[in-house]
Amino acid sequence: MNISSPAFKDGKPIPTKYAHGGVVGGKNISIPLKWSVAPAETKSIALSIIDPHPVARNWVHWLVVNIPRDIISLNENASGITMPEGCKELFNSYGEMGYGGPQPPKGSGAHPYVVTIYALNIDKLDLSSNTSLEAFEKMIEGKVIASGNITGIYEQ
Image (cartoon, rainbow, N blue to C red; front, side):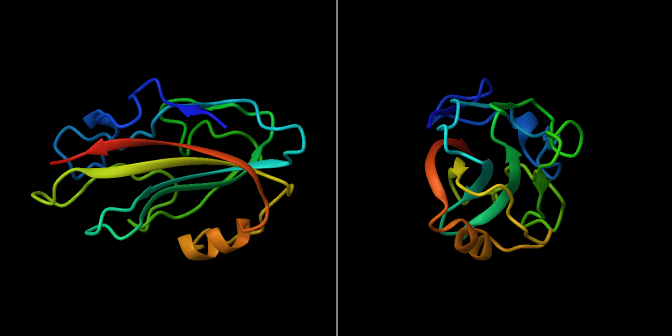
């Protein structure tokens, strides 16, 4: 699957307005995303944004499950406001529900923020709001029909 964002190109910087509120100029508004139509056998879609930098150690910035299969985009600032009906946002590593923007420790260098979309062969993932990344990955194992990702960069 192809995924993109009108806010940044793959491998390029994420604008500061999408950064967490602890960053000067950060407004913590979720990034806009667009993806290709899911394969016909798709029953639902999941989304993750993870920072795999060695300092961040797979910090979860956004986990969303049960996105209806016919949805192909999320608007800017959708988290907690205009998410598709039926989908479920989980807690991020900040301990907040929904999207949590980039906020890498100062001086730790450029961090990659990997945005991944998953087409799943299951209608619904029954996950609690505080499901860990490891549990999420285990739950989608064997259920992914197709996936795609882009990476945004952020540094302070």
